[in-house]
Image (cartoon, rainbow, N blue to C red; front, side):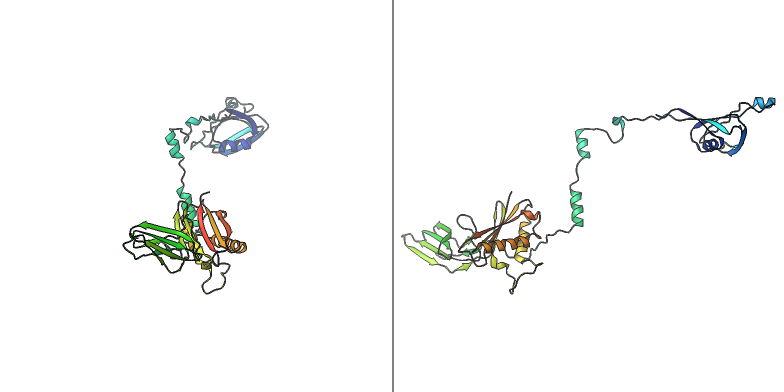
Length: 345
C-alpha cells in the first residue's frame, strides 16, 4: 500500500513541469525568496500554489495567500501566466491513491475448484495430437512390401491318397535319414487331402532347405497292410501362427543374390524385408529372436550377425530387441536354416 501524501521541496522549474505532466492531485506552496520564475503551463494534475506576500502594498497583503488549482485529467484548465516570486523553490505535496491488493485465491478468475469431474475434464491429456504431429513431420523408416510372397499362406505340402475300402490308415513324413517327423492317421477311408504345415510331431518347425518324403500305410478289414512310398520334396520358407505371434522359417540359400554375387552395403535381401513386414504387425515391445542352425558355430554366428544388420533398419521399435542365437547340427542343410519368432519379455 502506497502512502497517501508525499512531501518534498524541489526547484520551481521542475515543479511546474511535474504539475504539467502529473496525473495525481497535488498541492504547491511557494517559499518566499530573492528570485522570481515565470512559466506558462497547461497542467494535467490538480495543484495548489500559494504566492508570496508583496512588500509595501495593501493589495499585496490581500494576495499573500493565493491558491491555484490544476485539475488533473480535465481539458480547459489553462493558466496564461504563473509567476513565482521568491527563492525559486516550491513545496509539492502529492496525494497518491490507496493501492489495495486482493490476494484471495478463491476469488481469482480461472482458479475455481469445481467438482472432481470438472477437474478431470479440464486436465484430460490429448494423446492423439502429438502422434499426428510427429507422423506428419517424421517419415517412418518402415516401408511395407506386401507384393513379396516368400512366405505363402497354408500348408507346405499336401498329400492326396487315392485308396478306398480300408479299415485304417497312417501317413508318415520322413526326413533324409528315414526318421519320422510328422504322423497322420485315422480309421476308415482317408480324406481326399492331408495338409502338412511344416511342423514336427512336437510342434517345432522342420529345417527348411532339407529334403523330405512320405510313407502311406493302409490296412484292410482282413488285417492286410499295404505301403506306398511317395516322391521326395524340399521344404523352403514357410510361416505358421502361435500364441506369441508368427514364426517365420526359411533356408539360408534363399538369402543369396539372384545371379550370384554378394549384397552391397546399402542392399537388403527381399526375404529379409518381408520378414520385417511380418514382424511389424506385432507389438513393438516383444523380443525378436533369430535362430540360425548351421554345420559350424562360425557359420551360424556370421549369418546371425548379418541378419541383425539387415533387419535393424526395417524392424520398428528399439533395435536392441533383436537377438541372435546360433546352433550347430551335423545334418543342417547347406547354407543353414533360419527361424525368426517374437517373444513377450
